[in-house]
Image (cartoon, rainbow, N blue to C red):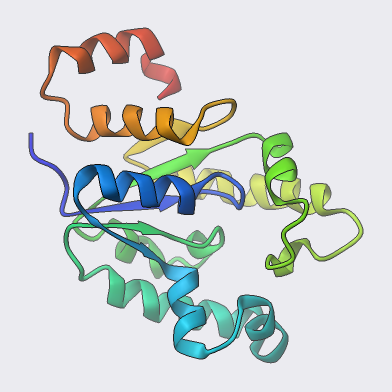
Length: 188
């Protein structure tokens, strides 16, 4: 089995897509791409500003165009925004010549990882945990249906998650078989 042309990371905010994506790309010898950061660079503005000026719909249109462009790159690990799965037209784009990995994490972990981040427009309200719960209930089935691999990230270091993902993406060694048995097929 050879490595996929592209690896696409999906999942909620705070799941570790950017951190794990950077490390995974380095481990695979791939280039790391972060769709949200590239949108910000091209617009010369951060995502909260784009949301304020263009609304969520305007941002999602930009996001679809960016995903379409980035899905043509090979030997890349692409970290997507948490809401990238919300537009049906993004689904075939995300799957195009790619292995899609859902980095799944608990609501509690998301709250902890995002509580001080002011660059997340959907969480700028009085009850961010309620927002995260609502988003999870809507998006989790979409992440799961797109995923070739579901990787739980709670209470795992990014380094451990990357090691487990490399074993899943390139299962050539006996070590991989032992690791799968150890982790359990239903939890990786």
